[in-house]
Length: 397
Image (cartoon, rainbow, N blue to C red; front, side, top):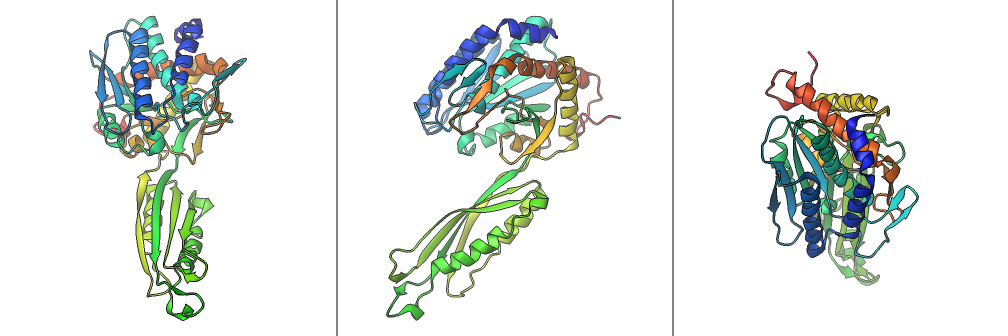
């Protein structure tokens, strides 16, 4: 096994302590005070494990948790962005923390506090086993991913543009432990129909039924799903009307769509935005957008995956890839053309579920995988011609 693997294996008790303290520090997205307390804990972990050679920039927010950025004082090439979030979907005290042999259950342990911690320990292992780091690590730990990254997206894109690759420390795929080399993009729309109210008995013919109009639209929207293209459109909520004896004047629906390519996103968005009510007396209002672009299997991303497979060979583990429907902040960085690889976190299962857990017995090898990928990436970067386009960085001549 590699030196990084040996170092991490020898420090599993310290890693366990760090992880317990990080998961115990609950950080629901909507609780700024709790999220910021977790941020302070992360600062302590960085200081304890990596020393004073990392500068912390705290990006403060008024209503959501602050975002944390750490960089080495001496910045060298290549720069790798370790992209993580430390907010969770769980309310404080909602699910317990417990160990069962090598399985660790707890709020946010899988999504994605274990992955965040493993990025720190991967660099810690390199700091302690190499004379010089092969890369310049940039840690960006955000606090609002679970609520759409509304305050962090601009920061993520800004920092990512200064980096040569992005390692997303979201967990590996639950059933196969595969890395995530493709993710669907997601968009959301709200459609509102205003009809005309009338007495359902005396003046039914004078009304324009908004619920009926919404029902026509629901059928059109659901028919946009095309599994062969990886496109799903789902009307998730519907509301309308007041009482049964009134022709309903208002009705609304919320729509979620997932797509595998930007071309398909354009098609779906154009179709939705061109919808019209069946009754010309009804008024339709449409509002929405593409919240996250898809993370596509670009050539740059695939070259990065090949390097991860080579890193796996050094650890005698087979690295596979998969595509998933869920999104991450890696969707943003990949859409910018920056080589991005996702799913480098710790294997387990149960994201957003009460049985959320990680396999702690796999922590050492998956953390070492990240360390070895840093080494291979650094060697590849140094020995390759400097190319203007990041997407071309790893294209073999």
